[in-house]
Amino acid sequence: MHPRLLKTFLAVARSRNITRAAEVVHLAQSSVSDQILALETELGAPLFSRAKSGLELTPAGLALKPIAEDLLRLDGEARAAVQAAAGSTSGQLTIGALETIASARLAPWLPGFQAGHPDIIVRMKVAGSGVLLRQLEDGEIDVAFCFDRRDFAKNAADERFASRTIAAEPLVLVAAAGQGSARHDLAALATLSFVATEPGCIYRHMFDTSFAEAGVAAPKLAAEVGSIGAIARLVAAGAGLGLVPRLAVGDALAHGDLVEMPWPGQALTAPLAMIWRRRRVQPPALKQFLTAARDTLVPVASPDRAGSGLESANRSKALFANNS
Image (cartoon, rainbow, N blue to C red):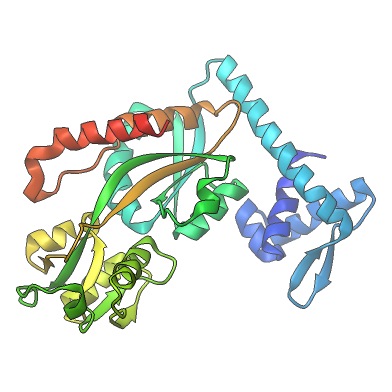
């Protein structure tokens, strides 16, 4: 069984759709169908059956799926071991990140990494936390950057993955210019309108939890939006308040489009984590990327904390040391 056929088989098994699987493996739909047929012919059994909801695995397909995942993992580790033994420094990797992290943290950092590692090709995918974890599990990305939700106990305890905390990103309460002078407690804030992210997002989780733990009903939502950038623009236009990561609205705060309001109670921070799959041998390209991120991907000092850059860098390295 050629690894290429197994990769296509798993893409179809996960998406239950030839068209979506073709997009994942970057093949034409006809090529995906041909590869599945070739694998079925080699194994002597049908692997899929058609249903109203899409393709379903047959008993033979269900038996093959975990073995195919193990074989592809071993194939990857074998290649990585050979590359490491040969002293290879080249390769390619795909990183996944939340929109906020991709634009505010990785975009300024990646050019420097690529300049220092010209033999490594880096691709980036932007998605939500749930999608990133699925893509990491399925092998579609090599490393994910997302905020760590402590209530995701299942993911935190999954021994297939390793993670390191990069920084604790502060969340800030923002309002349109001219609307943020008053101080409020949580009960008063609950009477105001908010623009919030969708359920499942770390910011929304912390937002909901803050009011729930205080015994206060959640505020009325003017809108639920999947993009932090769109939330910032809606807040600036006066649609409501927003609780967002400072790193995503630094420019808007500096330009006066948004103003920061005091958040009642304990300051809110979201742990920024780098997550990757454990392997006996890491591919050289990924190993170099993880090392570079550990050493140089540190929090950017906000304008009002310009003197704390060294402190932030040292704190970031300490966090790495504590999570290795």
